[in-house]
Length: 376
Image (cartoon, rainbow, N blue to C red; front, side, top):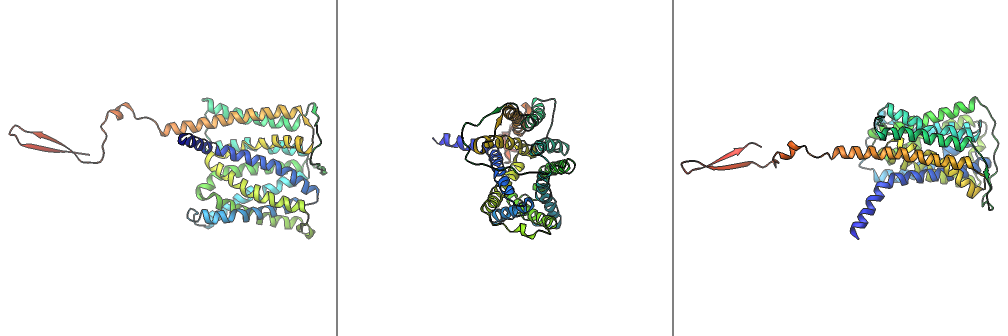
């Protein structure tokens, strides 16, 4: 029983990064529907971003303050400026550009473009040597192939429909689709800029965590600083509409609280932790799961039609994700084996030195005993 319990615990610890990232994408997929409902209800997207990260910062702060009191490094001007840039790329600039692009382009185009983040992050991580890539080995080929296969699956889900599969029951939730104003210059530019910014942010996490190795505190700082940056931007964007800051409806308040606690706090902490443990490419490769889960939730909960293209794309996404994770697991196995290499034959034949002075006692011809002190 003790052995089984220990094995189960080891398995859970080993699978923890995978479980965390699946939970992050599931929460993000659910958040897609409630934010869409809130925006259709009239909530300003930039006000939502500001309030959401204020709630996220308040949620993370007690854990960061008490759990990392001794581990948190001293805040210097250089570290603060790095956190300021980190927050700008992860919150203040990127998320506001994302929601701004949603007003000028189609959701299909936005979804397809945003899911290029894993590919961009993979390229950046290899360029700055956060990710190893050896195309002469199967693991290197698997990582590259998995990245592009997963990207192809996302493109299939968003750009190809095929025959529809009719929903066989009445959906529990009905969403009214909002209108968007197409601008095929401003929209794509904002979308591409947000993808590049997000990719840089994921890549930057590894360097920032080395200088500030306190994930909870970093999450709290990023939420508060990002909220301040978003608030400054929103104040300029809605300076002639002060009423948009006042939120009274239940759906708006529920969306802000849920997204703040779950997305900006819990998800943020899990992303930072997984990035520290597994690297930025591991984190971003789970992003296509959000597209797949949105399609599944839309079919079973909202009652949207499920197309065969979504099924084909979903299977392709899973295959690509499996290939990349297989390559990553082999990387971990190689690193572990290198650390635990057996001693060479010569090293095994050499006597072990314990640090204690060794002596050999000999008897000379005269019968006297002579002790030789051997060097350590």
